[in-house]
Amino acid sequence: MAERERKAAPAGGERPPSGAPAREEPPPVLPSPIRGPSCERPECYQAEPSGLLECYQCRYLCTARACCQLVEVLLTMLILICSSVSYSSTGGYTGIPSLGGIYYYQYGGAYSGFDGAEGEKAQQLDTQFYQLKLPTARAAMAVGGALMAFSCLLVLVGVLRLPWHFPVWLLLECTLDILIALGFLPALYFYFHHLLDAYDSPVCKEREHLYESKGYQGFSCSVHGAEIAAGLFSCIAIMAFLVSAGLAVRGYKTVHQLREKSVQVYEF
Image 1 (cartoon, one colour):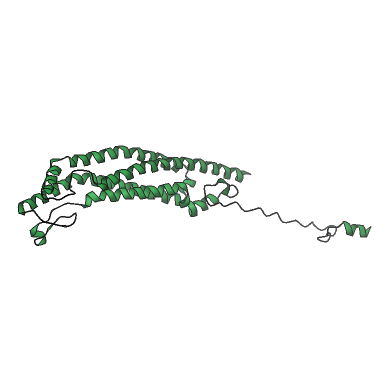
Image 2: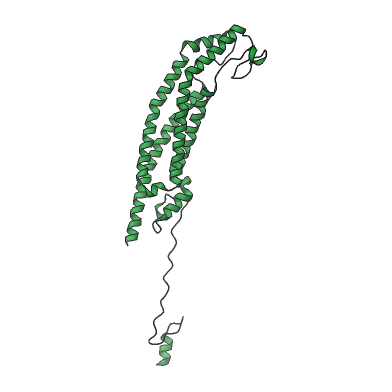
């Protein structure tokens, strides 16, 4: 009988004596949660609710919403730069008293052919034309700078994981993105409307004829390349803000689902 009991005992260890507590086996080691390359994968956070925070802290800039916001920063910065061209070019013809016998125009190059009266007239027309375009350039620069700061703020908010703690922020972000995209349309209309008014003014026409009479080109009363580029970048920015609004709504749904799952796991 004793030999039979020895054979029936498990081969991996001895049988505990009678009266001694049975040895507890260690719990099985569960596999760690899957960590994919993108933090938008829901399976990253099924077993670990705090994984979303880690992902937002380290990998938010790789998400589609962050990339769209970075594109907005770039586009608004380009709008600011293109608008500053009209603001920085003050015109202002400089004649003999200022440069010691060299006729110089601020756009570049040493010009000749103007006498004293015509040189003063060119300088006066340049200054007046600059004053006509100055309010439009200032408004465009202010809008571009404000939108660039707003886009940078959205990137910072995403990195700091504010949408996880306050999901309502994503709905507010979506609303602001839609309002900005819609606000671009009247802004573009007034931008080109005031520019065309400046180019159609008698000051611009007289200035154009004065320089053409001396054989100088490049002073025609038409919208120049930087102003056209500002309009094109604004059109692309409209699409970027609309896409960002859609991604904000999708992010709100994702965060809401993940928070519900984390509550269910905690109650379990």
